[in-house]
Length: 178
Image 1 (cartoon, helix red, strand yellow):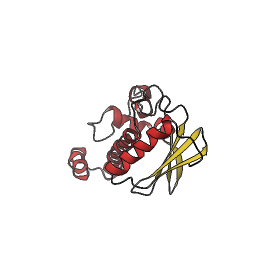
Image 2 (cartoon, one colour; image 1 turned 60 degrees about the horizontal axis):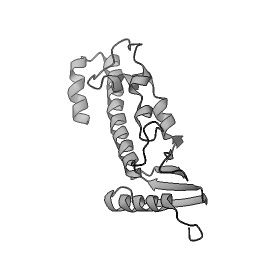
Image 3 (cartoon, helix red, strand yellow; image 1 turned 180 degrees about the horizontal axis):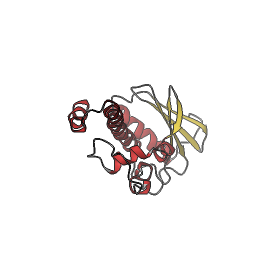
Image 4 (tube, one colour; image 1 turned 45 degrees about the vertical axis):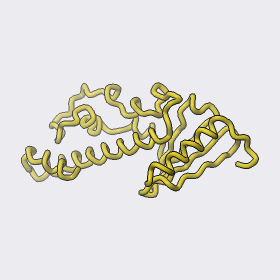
């Protein structure tokens, strides 16, 4: 980085990294790399050992970064993963107060109404220069909480169907798990 001239993007990212290190105890291991002066890579290691790999172009902050999440099981593009969720997950997004899936999922549930990809800060339609990396991290944390709750609901739903357990006791179980 000594040979590179720091521009507005670089200075902004350095300030954001400093803020994250000082204010988010779970994200201390952060590295910045350059392949060439036009592309910056920001890697943030999570407490679970995953790496949030941001590809930040020279046009930042006017264009959103791309985000790849690298796990022990492989890596994936964050926005593409949000875009390819199953209908069961969309059901719980559409009806968050439901604790089980009805026998026939309503075919009228349309992904466009509830797509997490379209509501993401990284969506170019939602991106503005005021969005910071820490906002994206917060969004990922919220999506992980939502994913955990939906996972509980899907697992319990299957168990209740197999064991023919009354569905009215699923709500207290999920509330306990949360």
